Image (cartoon, rainbow, N blue to C red; front, side, top):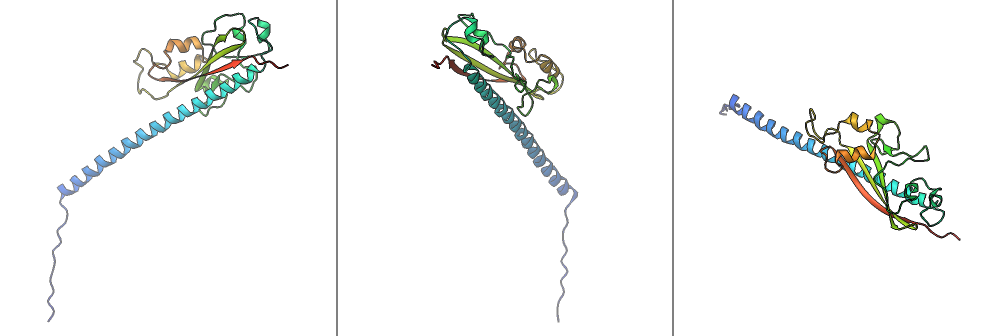
Length: 206
């Protein structure tokens, strides 16, 4: 004769379900916070890589420009053929930071989010300035290049920091070097920058 046994299964109580939901909620919040941090890091890395690429592009432009350096000397005529080195003419020291004025329509001091040249103020995300100084007067010079950008969303809410720069002010400044200095490049809470230098010199082409 077979004996049938009835097993009584015990279910979850309301308290156990609530505890489980609480644990899942805490875990989900941790995952979301980590996702937000990773997204922010990826955005910062993208901005930095783009700014570095722009700066390297300007190094190439300055090196190309130096090929038009006709002859050694401080006279303006020796740098007439250049575009970006021309401000060195007639100075025995160097220049302050300035916004370059490209001669080619395909080049600009402003760049969009993807690092493409643009002259449209509403599209500008990155700006480039130059500073020139003589190493050996009349024959070799140092060119400092800085690319700076507005880190959108770096500080949420209303601006309260004295060095805060709003997006509209940034784009409306047309990358002006004096304005950028007033922001305190490298120290302002939402404006970052990368710097690079290159050396150019007159080369004899006889």
